[in-house]
Image 1 (tube, one colour):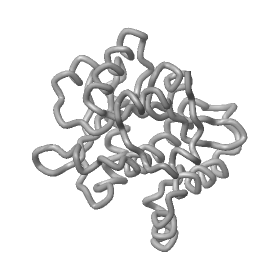
Image 2 (cartoon, rainbow, N blue to C red):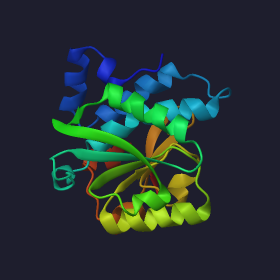
Image 3 (cartoon, one colour):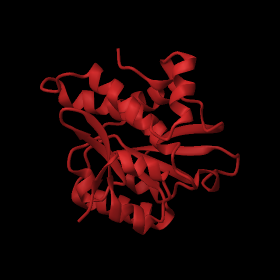
Length: 200
């Protein structure tokens, strides 16, 4: 079973949340749970990313400025062709997470074209592999609106996704420094110190 922070004992959650290093601790837990990525690599990356996604979002220091009119965080899963699969992922997240930093969370899904009309989106999770035109459209919208792009797909951080995964002998969050700067997103500095940095 894929480990999730919300399924850890309460005392472990409290310990991790007291420290800005809790993302690194979570990655170490996930690394131990996934000793080999040779088989079913894509699905495992996806499940690891689902665990990290809400925890990374919690380290956005401007989170309270990104609420919808109902005072909720709107987190969006974007897809191209795989609607049913993306809806399954949405249900997974909604079943695990009902709040981030005590802020109520709502998860929804949309295509890239529908994202343009979506309002008050705090972060996007890329559920499908996107072609260059779709990715560029997503990136432009995200930078303009200070939306975090989280992608589990290899190569997306290099294309401009805000946060992704680096998987080798250990698992680390992987961020694009240029995108963070352009988006003027402010992450907790200790997170940026422990995560892997990509810089053009």
